[in-house]
Length: 448
Image (cartoon, rainbow, N blue to C red; front, side, top):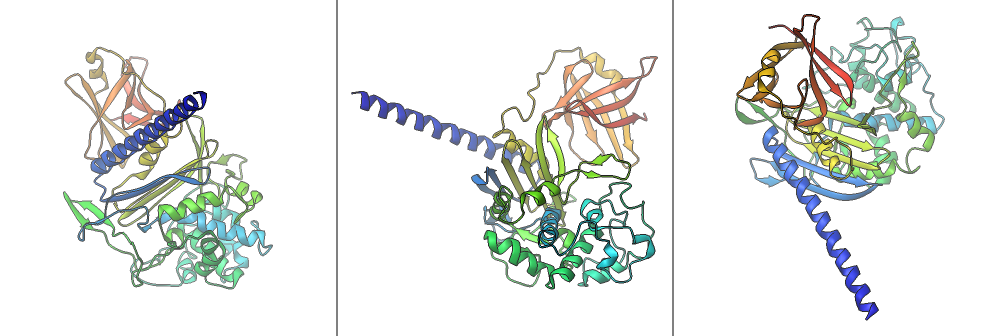
């Protein structure tokens, strides 16, 4: 009798577990589909990885709209600058091999570098602190060129700042790292990475982008323009800064490898996720091909990527040991918030719960107007009945600002952010202030 009770109890627990997992999966599916509709995303694939093991992998929408081919976990996307962490890994492998130092000067590897570049090191290139312009003027997306030739077109240009003085995103730096990899390894950088990273990990779908070779399960890229879905243009040129095609399943294998010494040893992984230190002694939250931050106290390392027709992101919640990978074939997609919304379902307390307060809508009138954080962006705050609305000139969509108090608001689209209105001594509203987890991240001046 006791054995029957135990078996019944175990069966009940198993059924409850299955029901919970199913409900969670359905919730994620519903969230992703709603975001795809809102963002006009044609196709999207996700993987959720816990301690290196996939706990959810799914495809949504269409990898090819014209042929009605569904997106799957096996669908191959361009991953854009998510590739930077893979280029960085190649450089760290050469460091582990004893073939270079992070403090080696760039001029040691590249011919004819100008005197202004003489203090630029491998570390500066990895961390976007070299001062080199973001894009080389000779880069042509529709022309196949050697990396060295593209880099040389930036030689005549002045540095934007002294090496190590600031952080500023720089794709040329990753062209230079690929060229260093080629010279030091004695192999094309794509071959080196295939042999040392992709092949050992079984990342069989990951490779450099190509328009001519047959790539099974390849997604086509799309852009929403003038109210219509259109085919995105394709780059003929291979950019080391955004080099690779991959799948969520392959990137999950890469994520799993980052828990072990299989590719990078512990010292290399620590270097990769350490904030860069600037000349002033201050640090910037970027490592080697990874952005470093925290979400509501949960440490995160992440990176996004974009190329025409594609947007991608990988986000590793370090202490929670949960990774979310989102790949899309839509130029207008914003996969970062999608990854965050998915992660919320697997990490309790990741996004704060907020409560809408009852306030007199008349107080909204003082907030109505236009605000500018910079010359390119204008934010319009308007009132529609009893609702306070928020809209940027860069987006056709309005969002409701929901009150937590008379001067603190949030949106359902991103509950991490709060919006408040700063006033002068006369009580007149002067700025719209945006905070992330209590830290000010933007301030827009009222202009009208």
